[in-house]
Image (cartoon, rainbow, N blue to C red; front, top):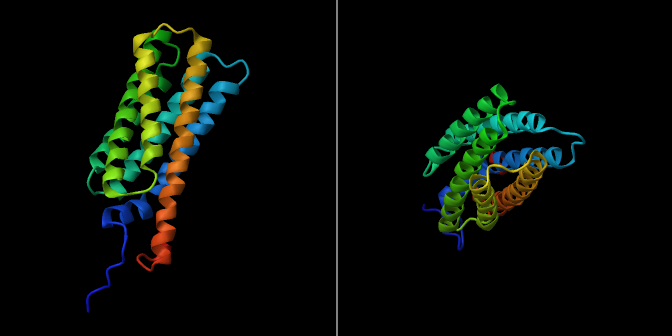
Length: 203
């Protein structure tokens, strides 16, 4: 006997995303918020200190992206793996050379922001194509990262204080957008569970 077709049921791709990836997005968002707050309000923070914070954040974010890519080997998983590799590589460089020139570190952060931003924008439009909730917030996160990266590329000679605040504000906006996106994706899990389309234990 064939299963009944439920009007408005989410595609299988969205169900897999909702049940396997939403918590990774949430963790990425929380990490970004914590890093942003540290960058903005850590009294007396130097550029070297912020770069160490950034290195840890980028490393952890990269590991989370790699886990997400490995766990969700569907369309677009390669982008997550690439994001993870880039995040880990940038994090290692930032931790290995935290006291290098401000311009070099600025360009390193810019590269990371542009890569992450583009991947988030591509992912947002993929979510939109699949009809998933939260795609707009994923787009906001991506656009914020790209604009930040472009600002650093256009003017890599920002003073340390300005750079720290730029990093902090962007990380905060990026993190909030990811957290909202994660909870919207989580709502998909709850809706599908209520409709009997998935087992809630998978969430």
